[in-house]
Amino acid sequence: MTDGDLLLRAVLNDPEDDTARLVYADWLIEHGDRKRGEFIRGQVEAASAGIECPREIWDLLPAGFEWLGLQPPEEFEIGWDRGFVDWIVSPRRYIWNRKRLQKLFSQHPINSVELCDVSPAFLDPADPEQCGWWPGGWTVDGKVSDLLFARLPDGEMFFCCDAGEWTGWFLQYPTWDSAREALRAAVTSYGRSLVRLPSSAFRQKEGGRIRKRKFVT
Image (cartoon, rainbow, N blue to C red):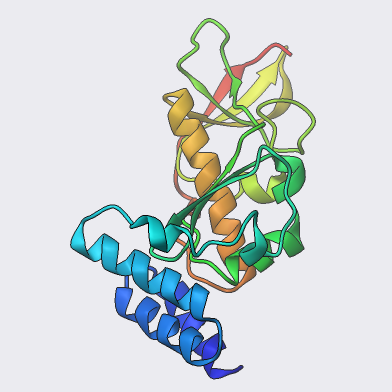
């Protein structure tokens, strides 16, 4: 690892530490990446002062996604905070890629990744406020990969059956927004794990209640 790698890692390990961001910005400036370093410093200083980031700082951003090294689809959006990408909104087909996530999370202390084309399912169609996620893949709305299902934060776990036959687990949340937030947390947790960063988004094995519930497919 170079000194720059170590300084960047300090930012990733503690995203709330503005000093780490400023030290990394200085290193970038000293090593020829002046625009990137000044962008980080300018955004940190504006945030610390509680003011809007000046236009001249935003003008340091290159066109497109050059600093990310990506060529994403039109639906891909990002938000910057104190010089780094803070959130991502992307179609699943683009962002759900191990190498791509690893690249992004190794360069930015990302706080949220939202899959804009994935929606939760309703366990009971008569109760539109109760929705959540099934494991088993990305085949239909409400189904997510087993890997992400295991990372979803605490919800109410149901053991679903139809005519006495087991149909699967369902992790339910009280609102549509809370189900979407749970998925954001799971994707972000997975991204951080790829670069060995700590995450608090794992669901504990003892968390959540398990109920039997009739569900007609």
